[in-house]
Image (cartoon, rainbow, N blue to C red; front, side):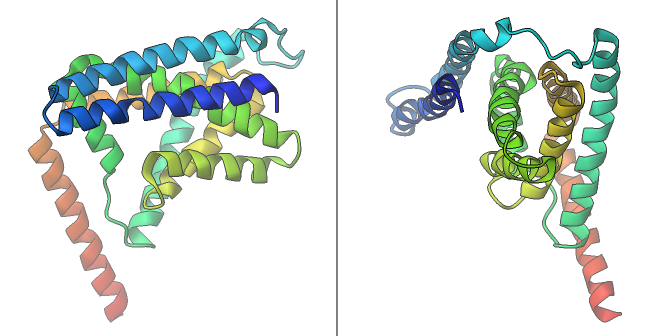
Length: 239
C-alpha cells in the first residue's frame, strides 16, 4: 500500500476522533451541544480537503484503458442505486426474518436527529461522507486487497470493515451488502466516481425520506414491524 494511503487513513481516524474533546466539553456544559455539531461539520470538510490533497497524485493519473466512458458511468450510477437498495432490502429481510434482529438503524436515527437540530449537517451524510468512505474503503482498502486476492475475499473484508465502522456487529449484514455492491461498481467501471455517486444518492434519498416522515410515525412503523416479526417467530416456533 502506498505511503500516502496510510496518511489518508490516519487523517480519517483523526477527523473522527477530533470531536471527542469537544463532546466532553459539551457534556460538562462548558460549551453548547450545537458546537459539537458544527465542529463535526468543520472537521469533515477539513478532512475531505486534506485527503483530496493527499490523493492528488491518484487524481492526476490517467484512467485505465478499459475504464468506463461517461455514458457507461451514468448508466451504472443509476443501476447501482437500484442494486444497492435491493441488496440492502435482502439484507434487512435476512436480519429480521432469519436472525430476528430489530429493524431500524441507530446510526441513521442519530444522524437524522442531528440534522433536524442543524440542517447544515446534512452535507456530511449526503456528500462528504460518501466521498471519504469510497476513497478509503473501496479505492484504498478494497483496491489494495484486490491486487492480492480474488474479488469475493477482498470485497468481504472491506465490506465487513465498512459495516463495522457504521453499526458495529448488529446490522453489519446491511452495510456489508451495500459495500459489496459499491466494490462491484468500482471493479466494473474502474472509476471510483461511480460508487461515490451511488453512495451519495442512496444517502440523500434516505435523508429526504426520513425528513419527510414524522419521527413519531416512523417510530410507530418500526414498532409495528417488530410486532410482526415477533408474531412470525411465534408461528414458526409453534409450527
